[in-house]
Length: 363
Image (tube, rainbow, N blue to C red):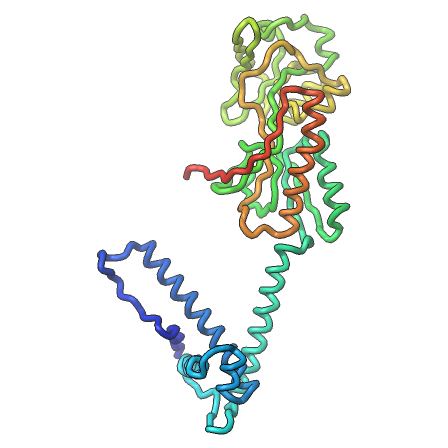
């Protein structure tokens, strides 16, 4: 028969009703969990006291080494024997001797507590040691725009970390997919609760390949887009219209629904091949614009949209492993010192942000 563990001294089982009326199921569950935790903690403390008695063969000396009262040590051993339903120690005024069952139980307690100590130490080292595996998920296309340098520098600094990087354009559940960190646009994250630290904010700009522009009429104002092939982007029903603001006011152009893709990288590649004009985030086309593969259009106008914010995403800010914290610090510093400063010099519309916020999506 399995016996219920003895409750800690001074702890009484509570009835299902309090002075204020019946408890809610949530409160009752929390009380049960707290009680179980108390019992487990009491059991481990009792095991440690029992082993100290075994080592010293005296309750008084064990109590002194544990900085407890002899009565407390005696109560711990009594609780263990009551819980197990067996005699662990034969006691006299001069010495304490283990029973046969006590010998086996003491051996098992030593193994259990030794393993527990080892596991605890290993877990605590994880917060400071920079080793193990780091799993990063990143928006496709960012690596070609300079973000790969973050991983190269991280690998040089922390060679004991195994780095795994996944590129994607699909939505990401940071908890369910077990990624440690994401470098993603905010709209890609589906986790109910996560931490988001902004890296860069990029406006959408209209671009086209020189080959396409060479065979079409020149663009002077947004209204001229109606006579061009527009490569639309479908994302949760957004960007059905391209809206601009200039000195002559606001202009909106409806995207031709017969040419819409659901991938930013596909949209970019189509623009590079001369298939038409695409409205793309600057952070995904910096190199192509700088090298002349894509030409920015309507420079006298600014798009009226939220653009794309690229952020560092991680499930929680509490108890981060050392390898995760090191990557977050490096990536934040990299965008602040290098990538963002270079972007600001060549593309004024891009800005950086350093704020960190807890994002909680509505259920």
